[in-house]
Image 1 (cartoon, rainbow, N blue to C red):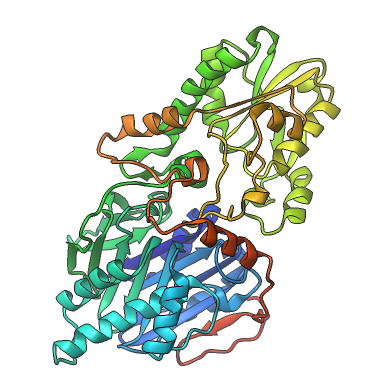
Image 2 (image 1 turned 90 degrees about the horizontal axis):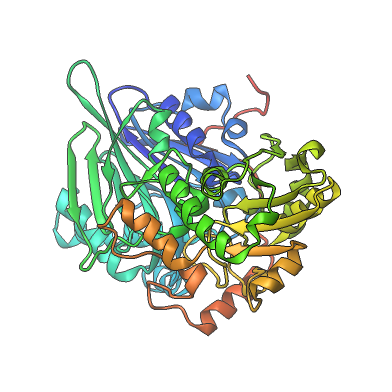
Length: 512
């Protein structure tokens, strides 16, 4: 999962892009990048680490211009250790394009073959996002060549996106900047990954536009949420603020990723016209009904969330069970999200650094712990051990999401079945594996209904990690096995920090 952001305004955008990226930090903590455009010149700075660590005062001064795009990275394809794979990516032809991508492509190998061997383009990393950029650049160049013009038209841009939709499979929310022209944004035809449009009107009646992975980014930029970018839709905003949009897919449908509502998105975001916070509250209500059926409620003394994502669900669950709600696990907010940390050993170590139990809340009590989901089971096992060590009499576990039994190939880092604790195990088996006295999972049908009730226009969902059904129709056993094999193969791409003005700016490492 990553976060993307784009903006066209009437004043410098560097600070707004930085502020918006910080609001999207939960979507990726591996790397960050910003590109601004000034006429035909791109100014770029990107590097590994959190937003606050990548950008210093000297970097921000060099990011001049009234339009730009930005990205926070959570590695799902390519090499997590390489700054070369930090986004946005850049190609010089046609016109000069920078692109940032949230999601994951499923036919990358086929596209790579075409891009490199047929289109004679060079791919410098293992990132599917760089492949996507080169597919877009190729289709744009063909459009301009076929129109026998050196000037790019709005039709050229939308036609290029339409051809890209026909070639590319997978999940993608994209923002791109074309030098001298403006901002392009588009979303995959299923709308698996989120993308929203925001606006800001100044005292002169001029409208600035922003595109982001989540509406919460606009809170940090003083923009208003206008609407979702529709699945398959593309928008183009010129550098002087003219707005164009077009549906570029043949059979689009609204089928967002369920895991966005369960875990990834911030609770104060609205995705596909659904309040993430309200959906999580409602998950707690349906989960409470299942807990009543499957656990000895009279034996439960207290309900506690595993902070932070599960808090709304846990509060509603406790209310509907008529049980006290307590916060017995205190979170260290300076430790990142353990689920998106690369490497099992790193995740395991960080759990005890991240959460600290208050013994007084556990001693002698039978506790129902509520989490948003159980994926690998590493965090859950460590937490159950901590709770028991703090004196809990019994520990039950409830998940606001169903059992994660299948790999996700659309941008969530759970690509191999071997890593999933629910793979091939019953709920009793899972309880034993994590050391709990009982374990309850949300029903998939109930979860889907919770979100659909908040927006009946949603046609369906990407629930592939729960049910093994892949919307793009191109995932088979061979594909999943290759994913597993690729994950065990280390990359040799070197790491480092990148700063370009394309013209390239070099700076010392001293912080201002």
